[in-house]
Image (tube, rainbow over all chains, first blue to last red):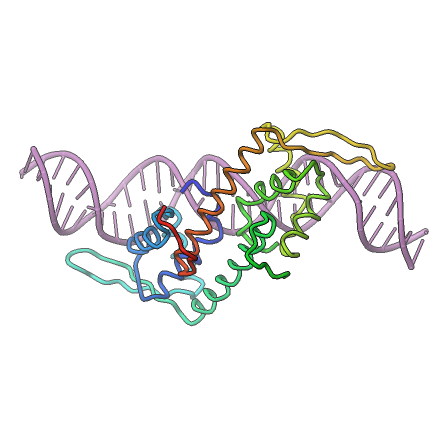
Length: 112
Length: 112
DNA sequence: CATTGATACATAGAAAGACTATGTATAATG
DNA sequence: CATTATACATAGTCTTTCTATGTATCAATG
């Protein structure tokens, strides 16, 4: 990523991926890459600290899985994590509508 | 703003406003507020440093206007500023499509 | 069998940018 | 006369993403 734009969305994207079922760091990167149409390649230096942050805040729970000689740290959403994701999705849509409004790109923007 | 989401879009929003005709700090705040449907209230601590940054980079040119006992520092876009705005608008749309893709909100997302 | 690339996690430190708080000054309003 | 709106500015804080680095296993290649 070269985008400063990602700031503030990385956690949401991670929560979103995990909301479809438990996942682990490396896989989350691949999923975000694929689901963003190849646009977003999360870096380890952003990813792992963010996972630890979300776990500390009880938004995620972690468990280790040994798999064929490799260890993976899986994360699942807590109820609080699921609530936060919904809130963040709403924030994103509000934010995007605001930016599109300023840019004159609104597709039926509602006043806030 | 409470949004970290704004990071990376503030300069674009400012350039966009100024692209419709020269403007000055205080007015830019009002215009962004209004055009974002009341969502984005740029703070002076973000606005003025950003204006100075853009001026240093020759994306904006400034001139003072005395108006009824008040001084206003107007900014106009340079050709480079206009080019950058177009690039940033493209970046934004790419970025938004990527986020919407991850969130499963794509309105006909194209692979990057 | 050694090297490379993919898989997998982790952290330290740098860089960037938006914020709060503060300061100055004039005009309008109550 | 005090407050609010107008108008610009900067110092310092905070957060977040990044680069760089380190460890370790497995698969493929020569």
